Image (cartoon, each protein chain N blue to C red):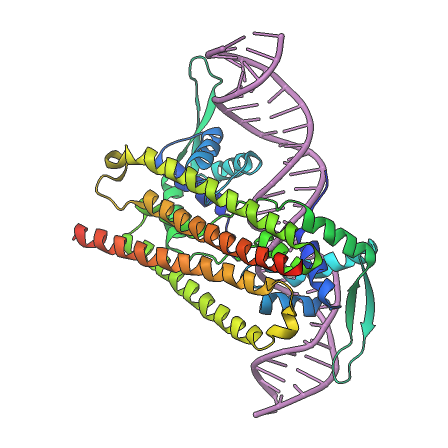
Length: 188
Length: 188
DNA sequence: GCGCCCATGTAACTAGTTACATGATTCA
DNA sequence: TGAATCATGTAACTAGTTACATGGGCGC
């Protein structure tokens, strides 16, 4: 069985843009694609090491004045080939698990107010992400031409997904809170 | 650190509706809440065992004519207390990882047609889930009164989430395919 | 006789998180 | 001098998946 390490492909993809260190990769993830992807150091460093052994990346130590030196990784030809093959493979269906819906589903075992609170927290989170997305959009807006350069606006398409998704979540939260508040009033 | 085993709470919640076996729990998950939750045997059985040791559930062997006998688990008082506490705890933020967006994001490393194909598969999946949700809705529609019995329609609220979410995904897919097809035509 | 559903379980593995340990430089 | 940022890494753990092993009963 082919084992698929999604983190590996995420790192290879980022390195296909430019050589980066483990620290850089984490920063890039957190700042640019955090709304649909995350990584942590405890996973990044071991995977980089493994990829170096397999010659998918090469390591170079870089010294910058006034900063600790760092290990910068570059993707190799072999790495690029592997990345391309992964991009062509079908997307694995990952059944997502929504803890908040599990709590709503078991709502009978707790108070309506508790559930309303949980949904409200979800709403606030969705709003916060939407704000964040708007900021990223503004930021890439000013670099649009350099970044896209006549090619498909892939970053923008990802941002769109975020907007569609979190807007839908916010709407559901509003509707749900409304329904639950009416239920609560009925009880009184 | 308090360790949180979400599967454990999912199982406890389901057992709070009625006593079930490992097999029943899997069936329930697949048939009723698969659009936002999943479990597999390799996780269910060990967790049930662990919960029995901790006296959160009790096991009884049930014999049914013409069927293999099965181990039916019931939630205990202690289990109910733990479930309530979990329901009141804040929802843990689980950053979801969307493989399809990762592929879109790395679109420059492959062909537009490949990306269009991936998005199209996503669209078909969303449509299929929407159909499935409609079927579940129809099914619970006929049992509405018994199930909800004047209490908040929690199942329905979960279904609504699914509808909002997959409709949003389908819309994004349509829009994205449209944009990418125009890009492809530009290239020719 | 075959395929499907019922039913339970383990072993091996892949994936991902959290906590800890360490230490440099910059800036207020 | 202390907080923030830069930078790398390991150990221990939690979570989740896949494959395998086993076997009975039902309906066509």
